[in-house]
Amino acid sequence: MARLLHVCASPRGAQSHSLHCARALLTQWQTSVGDLHIVERDVSALAHPDAHFVAASLRAPALRNTTDHAALALSEQLLEELDSADVLLISTPMYNFSLPSGLKAWVDYIVRPQRSFVSTPQGKHGLLKDRPVRLLMAAGGPLESGLQQDFLSPYLCYVLHTIGLTQMEVLQLPNMQREPEKIAASLDQAADWIARQGASLRQILAQAEV
Ligand SMILES: Cc1cc2nc3c(=O)[nH]c(=O)nc-3n(C[C@H](O)[C@H](O)[C@H](O)COP(=O)(O)O)c2cc1C
Image (cartoon, rainbow, N blue to C red; front, side, top):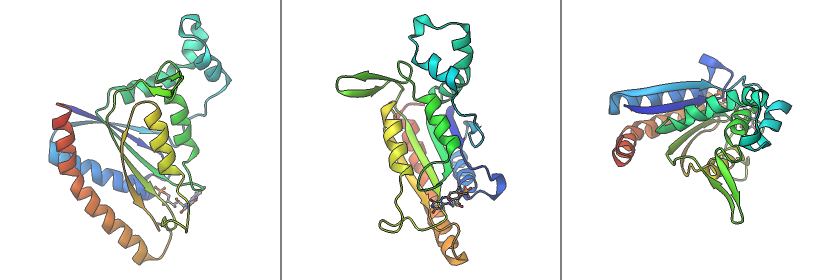
């Protein structure tokens, strides 16, 4: 059975546009591929990495003690969730042109030297298995270039690439805090995109022989 990890970053629960669209996409995927094992990880209130985590993460694995292993436990759990997923879905709001801090904390837990990437003279090299990533991002305002800079999707694309995940596709939900007609137009576009994703997931899973 195909496995999917849904990382959701909005703290707004049922009010969240990004979560609403992610749930619609999951329903679409389940309809088109049948059995799908979904793990949902809410990162909106994830604790930020602390000094123990930083020290343990930077220490050579062979030198780690019991305290280090305890400090890395959450990071290991998040990495195992990611490692065992065939597809990664991230749903998130845009906060101040970028990602909310809970999602940034998740990134800081999963992007770890010697665990998910290694540094080489040619730059960082990802250690995780490549797999498709879908990003659903909601913004209050417009996202056309010149009106507002999107640092969220290019950043996530770059940082996931660093650990080996190179296949990201993005659905933007702009204007979520604008007039009702603009919200409706955005949600209509999202519905079209979601409708096309069923066939796309079937193809992805067939190629990956899942
Ligand atoms: C702290 C904060 C910062 C925000 N920054 C931006 C921003 O830079 N650009 C933007 O278009 N909307 C911004 N918004 C609006 C949210 O992106 C918008 O409400 C979105 O729908 C939230 O996603 P959600 O509905 O999934 O929770 C911000 C909202 C908050 C609370």
